[in-house]
Length: 119
Image (cartoon, rainbow, N blue to C red):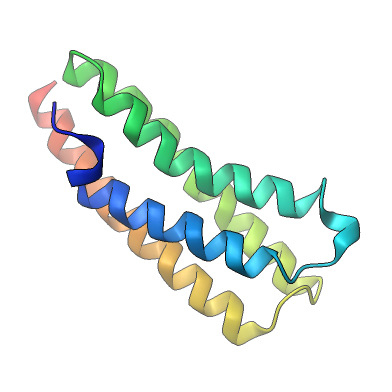
């Protein structure tokens, strides 16, 4: 397998992690162990699963980790929606973060389809 940092999906997920950390820094302090932690974990998991999976020896194993990454991206989609509805961030900021998440999802799904063909 390739080095994880050469994967477009990992690059997009890493960009998402950075965005989530920046946005959640402005969320209410009482959410530090709630939504802030959960949002950061979901974003981190999307990138970390791609990094870990890329080190696996088979495409079948790698596919499982990509699947986990996609699930974390779905979780983050809900967290962004919830945070917006709780007025923890402005609609414009939520839309911007969702666009980054959506791009990460698109390229991660592309990687998933590619790996499925080889598995």
